[in-house]
Length: 532
Image 1: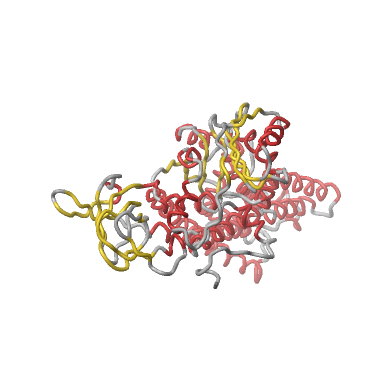
Image 2: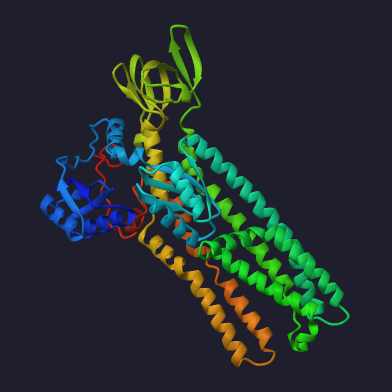
C-alpha cells in the first residue's frame, strides 16, 4: 500500500542540492513521487523510512524521520461529497510550498538560452529551492524564502528585467498589457523592415542583381544608409540584447541575429565605400538580407505573442469564474463591495444567478449550486445551513447567507489556479533536454561559422572574401533554433490550460509526458463516468 513519509533534511544549500535529492529518491522503484525542499521531503510510495534515509545519505546529505508520515488517502467514491474531497486534495499541498512561491514577470528573454541563464541566476539566490522559468509566458515561478528584491536583483544582474507580482489579477493585467504592447511593437517593426526589404529583394532579383558598379554606386550608398536606419529602428532590440549577453559572458539567439545581419551590412557598405579593394566578382551587396532577416524574425515574434495569448485563455477562464464584487450583509443592510475587501468572518448573501465570491459556510437559506467547475458533476447540488460553498460555483436556484471562511489566494479555486500555473511552468524531460542543448548551442554555432569561414577563405575559389562572408552569415542565420526553445513550453501551456478548462488538473509536465505511454485508464466514479 502506498503511503507518504516525511523526512527532515540537513545539508541542502541550493536548488542543485534539492534537485539531486529529488532525483535520487525518484530513481527508486518503490517511490512514486518525491516533493523536496531544502528543509524536508515528502515521499509517496511503498518504500520504508530506513531505505529512504539511506538513499539521501548516499546522495551526500542527512535525513531523519520527521514523524509526519500518513497513509495515502483512499480514492474518491460517488458517496463522498466531491467539493470537500477536492478541497482536501488541494489543501494537502504543503503550506510552505504554496505560501513561499513567488511569481515574476520577466522581460528581455528571447530563447531557451535566456531561460537557462535566468534559472541559474535565480537558483543562486540564497533561500531559493527551485526556479521554473516559462519562456512562453515570459514568467518565473520561484520556490523558497528569498525576498522579491533579491530575485529582481539577480535577474537584473543576468541582463534581464523582472517584476514581482503578488496579486493574481495584477499579474493578469500586467501580462496582458505587456503581451499587447509586445505584439504591436513586433508587428510594426516587421512591417517596416519587410516593406523596404521585399521590394529591394525583388528589384535585385529581376533587374540589378545586387552588383555594385560605377553607375549605381551612389544609389547603393543611399540604400545602405536607409538599411542602417531600419536596422536600428526595427532591429535595435536584437543588438541591445546581444550586447547585454556579451557583457554577461553569454550568448543567445539574438546574438546570432545580430552577428549575421551586422556582418552582411558591414561587408556590403565596405564594398560600396571602397570598391577598389574588392574584385569585380565580389561586389555583390547584401543590404536586403539584413532587413529581410530582421523583418521575418520580428514577424515570428509577433506570431508567437499571438499564440501565447490564445494558449493562456483557458487559464483566464478559470480566473473569470470569480466575480469582481460580493454582496455584503451588515448592520447597515446589504451593499456591494470589491472582492478584495471581503475578509474571513464576514456574512455574504447569494441569490439565483450569482457566482460564489469566496469559500464559506451557509448559515441561512437553501439553494441549488452548479459545482461542475470544481467536481465535474453536472447535476446541481442542494445546499442548506451547515454546508460549504466554494468560490466560482454558480447558484442556479435559491438564496442563502453564508460566512466567508477562505478568501483571496486561500480559496479552493485560487489553489487550483496556482496548481495549474505551477504545472504550466514545469518542464518534462524533453524540455530540460532542449534547455541543456540551447545553453551551449549559440557558442557552438558561432564556432562552426568561424571554422567554415576560415576553410572557405583558405581553400575556397576566388573571390574568397565573398564566399567567406556568405558561408559565415548563412550558418549564423539559419541556425537560429527558436522552435527548439518555444515548442515545448508553448505545448505545455496549451495542453495544461486546455485540460484545466475541461476540469482535468495536471500536476506537472512530467505527468503529461508519461501520459503518452498510457494504454489503460481506470475510473472510479460510478454514476458520473461509469454506469452501475
